Image 1 (tube, rainbow, N blue to C red):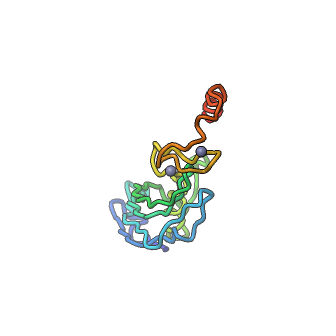
Image 2: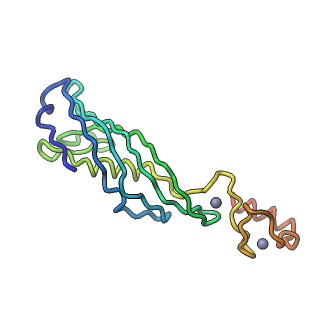
Image 3: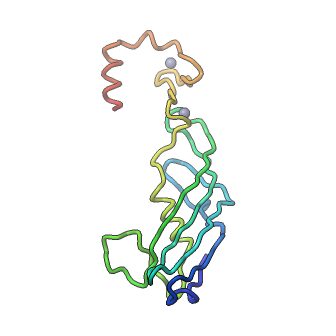
Length: 164
Ligand SMILES: [Zn+2]
Ligand SMILES: [Zn+2]
């Protein structure tokens, strides 16, 4: 969605509100996660002493796959986004600045970029997920398998070190 900022671009104190559904479901992630259609971004762009500042609350539901046990699970995302909008980038180092297109800002681009920057590299169904047995594939969250006794304890220690 493109938001028209003509009314506030030269008016300190002015603000424009928005409430729309960013097309996050079109994105693909290496982790295999996907966003369900129907995500929502609610916020404002305000002219604060000549600087355009965007604030938004993003709500989305993701379908994720646990990186350890491969179980599918649902994750609620609620993210606060703040960004500066400008006609030109004066400080190349500052990546939180988004460029205007004339009097407009491309809200899709701002929300999608902020969402991706905050995205985890991998998802876990729970911090304590025990994962699958490397040998028999049993889900160790459901209880121990029978392979355990066969592992040499010295190798087990080594494996733990390697995993860290
Ligand atoms: Zn898991
Ligand atoms: Zn096993």
